[in-house]
Image (cartoon, rainbow, N blue to C red; front, side):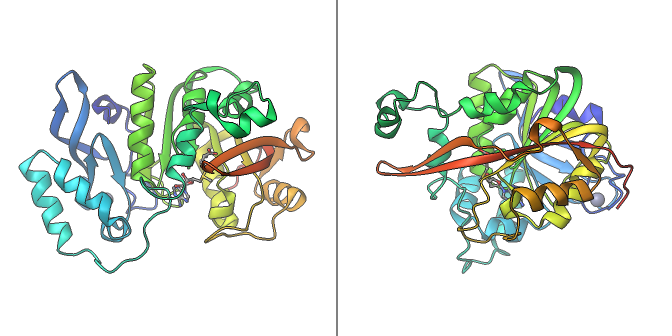
Amino acid sequence: MKSSLLNFKLLYCINHNERNYPLRLDILIEDPENKNECVEGFLVCPECKSQYPILSGIAIIVKDIISYASQRLSIFGKWYSNSKSEEMKNYLKNLSSRLNKNSQDEDRYEIDSRYFQSYKWLHNENFESDKFLHLLRWKIKPSDVYRKLTSGIHYEPEGLALDLGCALGLSTIELSNKFSFVFGIDSSFSFMVEAKKKAGEAGITNVEYIVCDILNLPFKNLRFDLIFGLNIVEFLPIEKLLPIISNLLKPHSFFVTTTPYDYNREKVYNPDLNDRTLRSTIEKSGFEITIKTKKESYIPWILKINERTYLFYFLDLIEARKVSKHKY
Ligand SMILES: C[S@@+](CC[C@H](N)C(=O)[O-])C[C@H]1O[C@@H](n2cnc3c(N)ncnc32)[C@H](O)[C@@H]1O
Ligand SMILES: [Zn+2]
């Protein structure tokens, strides 16, 4: 994580509703080739003294680290073996004794799980030899959808953007071309590590990837000039999600979302949403939908599950401008 970020007071302790305590950075290990990069350390709240670990350069700002790690025991093992400082080893050792070792709930977006490879495929790895794309005679790459979705976004060289549930950060990288800085957040630690690696390989320096929960973000209200939330509405209660997004946005700023309305998956919310009800719910939450996205759209999006299985979706795109001064 970039140490210089802390100078801008953008990250706050999630234990206080008003988000009035900016986190402090305690660096344990720096990247020897980039002194601005904290590889291992803690973000610390000056008020309640909560510690949020930074591992492999990724900050993990979650309310309940024991429950988070218990759902990812194999990832926890890697945290321990990859950690370099004595202080981090001790912290993790202490955490280890409190983990629920019987938890079955491995996150499906972590490395080795069902969807990790599917999202890697979106980075166009081996796409020339892909049998399905060949069959469709596609001339486009799997990642092109993210360029298309950001093509209408205004260039805001001073602006700050947020990409919710960003997975491997394809949309985050597109947004980094239009904004001064972008936060990509996701609950999957493996996604954030891989997204950070991809951004580094592409020489992109104005993004930061953080593990956190969309429903409990470490940001202050009225901070963002744009929020993306692509293909996440099925996984979150919409009545909680929309007020959070509205509060984080500056007045007149945009929320952009897509969804395939696929409720045929594990652990979904809002099964009644469709193109009309989603639009009216967004409008009732203090947004105005842009004229060009008032009607439902059919944007192709493919996920490769394995060599012989693909999910072909049509996404509906909604761009909504915050119009209310709503304070929830
Ligand atoms: C269907 S994927 C969409 C990924 C990406 N936005 C895209 O369109 O390619 C949903 C993502 O949301 C993340 N996610 C789901 N619930 C979350 C939560 N409560 N907090 C943070 N991330 C969450 C998942 O880890 C996953 O990466
Ligand atoms: Zn605190």
